[in-house]
Length: 248
Ligand SMILES: Cc1ncc(COP(=O)(O)O)c(C=O)c1O
Image (cartoon, rainbow, N blue to C red):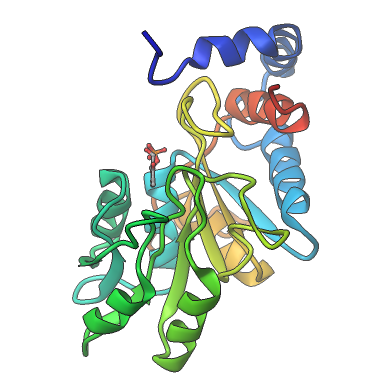
């Protein structure tokens, strides 16, 4: 039987480095949002290109919801997404208070069909969320054109496609905001839950950093309505190991 996924094989591949990283975190005495998360965010952003910012969060569903919330989207706002995706895409959209509107997929790529997006645009549409499914990138150039023409936000759901490229450009770098899951079965997966948001604007990164921790500013005052979606140091340290040495 071919297993659906084998996260244990991934751990075994990196065992000595992961064990070392875990011990380093345990010995540090600092377990949530610290040096490892900062380093992971920097390394993840620079893996994708220059002038990008990454924010580690608790899981990929939260990453989607936080992208939408950072844009001020919520109740009454519609987000067009493919009918064929993990239910988590829809859960993230609904967690933000938005309503998913389903577009058809292209039968070859299995990703959202840009023509179907145009057919679904209505007065309440605020965003398009393509999903790069099974490692296969969606047609980002056409989708961005549609977004621009209709003044819609575009958020990429990259949870199944870390490192995938379109003509040498990595998914997650086409839109202003992109969400990734780091669940153990993903291309870049930890040994627990984790997620990351990639964004072009430092201001947005800072806003999402505030949203992921109770809406705090640097003085720990809640200046906006926030959540708890922190990434822990252990997962960040393990993700750093796996990102540095891809499995062969
Ligand atoms: C396409 C897609 N989007 C979002 C998610 C959400 O990720 P998580 O399970 O980390 O919340 C997943 C993973 O299950 C996924 O496959």
